[in-house]
Amino acid sequence: MVTSPPWLNTVESVTRKAMSTQRHGEAKGKVRIEIVRVYDDPGHQGDYRALVDRLWPRGIKKSELLMDEWAKDLAPSSVLRTWYGHDPKRFATFARRYRRELAVDPVAQRVDRLRQIAVVRQLILLTATRDLEHSGATVLREVIAGLTQ
Image (tube, rainbow, N blue to C red; front, side):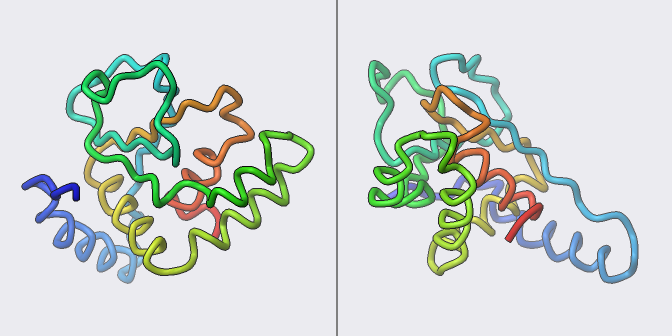
C-alpha cells in the first residue's frame, strides 16, 4: 500500500481554507493538472506524479518511472476499457460511462484526494496512451478539475 507523503497532512487545512474562500465569494483555488505520456516524461521534481493506467506501461521498469503513486483504481474498469478499445467514435459514450465510475465511492474519494493535491502542487497524470485527446486520463483530468461531474 502506498503511504501518503508528509506534506499531504497540510492538504486538508489548505482545502478547508480554499472552500472557506469560495463561500466568501473570493477566487476558487486553481488546480494545476497536466497529462504526460510515460514515454515522453521528463520527470520534473516537485510535481505530484500519478500513473493512472490500470496496466503497467510496456517497456518501462518500475524502478525507472518517477511517480508518487500508481492510481490504477482510478483507471477505467477492464470491461469499459476493453469495450472502448480506443475507438474515437466511442469516446463520448466512454467518457460518460467513465465519469459514472469515477463518481462512486471509494473511487470518488480518491478523485477528491487528487483534487486536493492539485490545489497545493502541480499534478501530473502519467499514462501510456498514445491518443491523449481521447483517453481516460483526459476524462479524469476534467473530473479532478471539476469541469464535469
